[in-house]
Image (cartoon, rainbow, N blue to C red; front, side, top):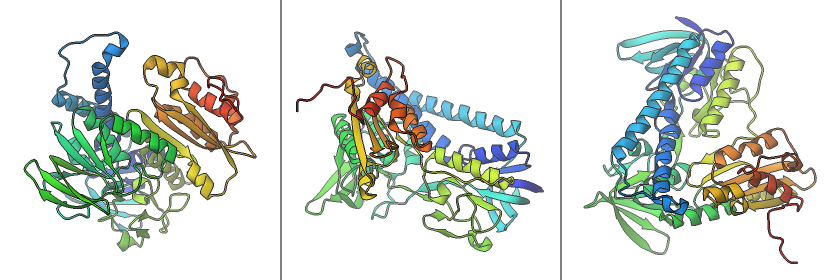
Length: 465
C-alpha cells in the first residue's frame, strides 16, 4: 500500500506529525512498535507527574496542621497510587487513539525499517508487510543509556522504566546521575519514605541549569532528606544482602553504600538501530540523526524529529519539530526555531528555564543585567505555604531584551511561559514589567522581577547604601 506520509514512531513527536500531515490532506500511515504516546506517555512525563501529584498530596496531608487542619491515621497504598498512574496513562492512550482515528490515519503496530528512500518493511506478530510512502518521518525516540560500570547487569540495578513498574517503594535507593530524570525520581520516592542517595560525577546536580538556581535547589533537596554526593564516581556494583553494594570514590576516599535498588539515570541515547539508516544512506552519529532546519535528513524526503535527532530531548520540542516536518513533507517551506525551548524539572518545588543562563551570557560576552525576586515576598506564595524559590531574569543592557528566565518555585512550569513568549518574540523586559498581572497570583513574581531589571521592585525591602 502507498501513502503520502509515513511516520515511524508514535510518541509526542510522531503522532503530532501524523495528525498535522493528515490535517494538510495527506494520506498518512503511523507505525508504533509498542504503545501510542511513546516514552513520554508510557514511561516518562505522564506517569512520573502522576506519581508526583500523589507524593505532593501525601506531603500536604502530613503538613495539614500548618493550615489549621487535623487528620488521624493517615497513610498511603502504593498499589493504589500505581493504579491511578496506570489509569491516567490508559486514559491518555485512548485519547491519542481517538485523535488518530478521527483524522483518518492508518495505524500499524510493529517494528519498521527503511529498505529504500520511500520503502518501509514492517515486522508484525503476523509477518512482514511492505509499504511505500512519498515522504517518511522518523520519530523513534530514545532509550536509557547503559551504565558503564562493573556489576551494572545485577538484578538490583534498574532503569527508569523498571522503577515505574515497581509495586512497592524500596526502603532505600541509590540514584546514579543527577540530571532531570534522576532528581525527579529521587524526589518522588523520597516523598514516599524511600531513603535516597544521589551520586553525580560532576561538581553540581542538574548540569546546564543556572548555577544560582542549582545551588538553591540542592539546599532544598537536602532539606527534604535526599543525600547528594557530587564530584563522586561509581566504580563498581556488587551483590549485597539488601540488593546491591555500590562502590564510590570522590578521588581521595572510597566508600560503599548498601542499598535495595540502584537507579541508573545517566541519560538517554537516540534509538537508531534497526531502522535501516545505513542501507538508505542516512547520516547519523552516536548523538543522533543529522537534520537541517526543515527537519530533513541528507536523504531527500526522509525527515527525523525528536529524541532520535539528539536535539532538545523534551517532549514539547519533539511535538514542535513534528509539526515542522509534517508541513514540509506536505509541500510547505518552514524551519524550526529553537531559540526559546523551555525546560522543566518536576520536583517540589519545580524548576523551569528558558534562554541563556548567567554563565552562558558571560561566556558569550553579552552586556546584561540580572534581576531576582524571591517567592517569599509574594502574597499568593505565602498564602499557599510555598515560599521556597525565586525568579531570575537576564536582560540585555542595551536593548532591554529578555535573554533568559529561570524559575525555582511552585508552578514554575506554568510561569515560564512568560519568558518563552518574551524570548521567542524578542520582547524587552519592560513589556513584562508594564503588563498588569492579576493579584494575588504567582505570576506577580515575574512582574516584580522584570521591574527589578531597572531597579523598580516594589515588594522588596530597600537595602541601605
